[in-house]
Image (cartoon, rainbow, N blue to C red; front, top):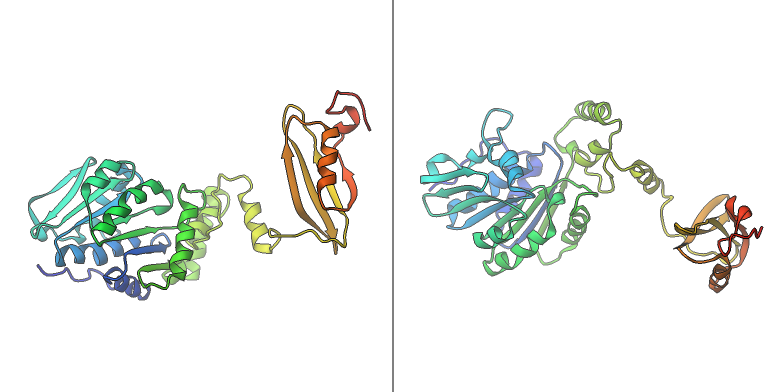
Length: 338
């Protein structure tokens, strides 16, 4: 069988990815690519399909759910009307070599290779597929246990695992995705590959701004735009109440590590509680800037018992700021203390 030719010209950034997909030394690839960056088409048509034609093997595409695999991949139609699944040409399929139900998405080639699409939560099917290549799409929303199930299989079969997606820090696997990206970048063995392709690689500034304004119109902010188009690792979802505040604080450097400076006094601010929690913030005022250096939270403890705790800290205190209800009652016995 002949390996299908490129249906569309490769963009410059895709050439290095295609080289890595077809490098037998690489056993794990993480492709962090923005929306509309052709990560799905590139992985399938330039990685899986050629490998299935060259060798007899089973390749498995894994989505967070089988229904997502059916909708996002198996029945997907591209901008020009071409079906994504047909990057594996029908003339390479065995007679009766395609199943199309959500429970069995499968293509069998005339050389015996098999391509399947499965949902991540069906662990038995993932094991039973015994694939040489497992490709995890929409990786930020992937239960990591699916990878744990598959890893011993690809290692035994001397195969590879491919992960694709956009950053999503509040995805169930978003932080793992970021850790893997950093680890793969630092890898010295030549067996790992990662890339980070934001939309500026294939979209003009004018088009990007138009897209951004659309997100703002629909969502009231550009959180999703920054996450999906600019690959902002730290971008919380638009439903996160403090997400935009935390993102801004990280960017301007006001979130960081601020150790105790013995040359300055420490102040405390209290949020008293009896039935609910009591919180204490320890801070210093240095060069006109408030630096929070410590915090403590507890419940079911009296103010009297908190004094030895404060004294145990290595701090020299200035003032303690308590809320108005400290004047009304004590958390010891409801008797006024201040």
